[in-house]
Length: 268
Image (cartoon, rainbow, N blue to C red; front, side, top):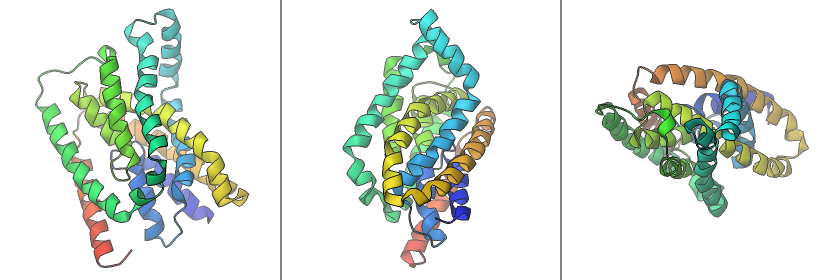
């Protein structure tokens, strides 16, 4: 893989992992758009480690505080949060292992990606409108085990390119009563074990499939993803404090329609 394309893939990964526009969809489209071979899900899972570094760096103080709280007061709101994140990760672990063949096969179809980009946008719009009409929101510290499991189940939808992990988890967090900014915060914290697990699990496969010559490309993509991922988190948390999800809905629909048109006219 050319290093310029590795950097581009890292840029796409960093910007789209946390924005609700689907990183897997963009990483699937980019090779076709630029006439490059599809590096496959193993490569994209590994460069996600860059966005893992970004979210850990952004929430470093929170993570240290929550880890301490887990031992000081395991039944308190903050002490329970690491366990809730662990519980919310279980569904995607089970689904990822069960659906591995499909994730690496038929679900990577660009037709599927385009359809899901558009279809899930409508779900996002309905949920965002519902959340906007609420009189009050649930405090972040009142997240329950049931809430965490529901958000974790929503995270499994991101195994389908086009859904968006952050989009699915933020939407479910809105449904259980969180504000937009708190929904994004829980979504990003929940991403830590999911991204780490996928990256480590796929690292050997990526080196096996792509060869050791791919190490520079993996390093470049991961590094770029880390820098841009951090910027994306900081921007989105601020944005959701005073804005809704409509701009992302519009973007997803336009991108999905453009991809469908490109496929219909055999441009891709």
